[in-house]
Length: 192
Figure (cartoon, rainbow, N blue to C red):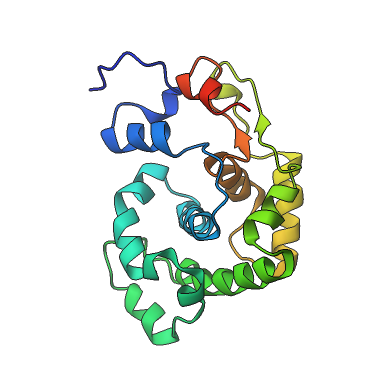
């Protein structure tokens, strides 16, 4: 049980792994392409599952997906990807596993076009986080006009498993959108 008296977003509950993720990562602006790729890859695997499931498998994902190096994931062979289907330490969804390679390749092409993937993504928000002011978790949207526009553009570029809901979750996690509740201690800390 969490006993540190900090006000947090209620969604993180009191699981120590979830609390640490909330306190140290969720909503922190990401400007490093490899970190951005890690978060995007994990979000695509999370689709349809709880985030805590992904967090508990994160280190195994890191091992199996080349430390989240997009250049290395882009070069994974069909055989390597097939082998992942028997690894109980990750989410074993064939389409998502093969999409990881495709998305790494598309990520690298996009990064080359814009100088970095972060430059591409941050341009959608004018290179400044959008700061929302929600009072309750029930107010948090699962998608927005912004995530719909980004999803459409990413799909046009060839990304897979990047629907508006996945994209919105990614924007929240990577700090492009600050959706910490206003009563949460991280809302103020992460507001520009």
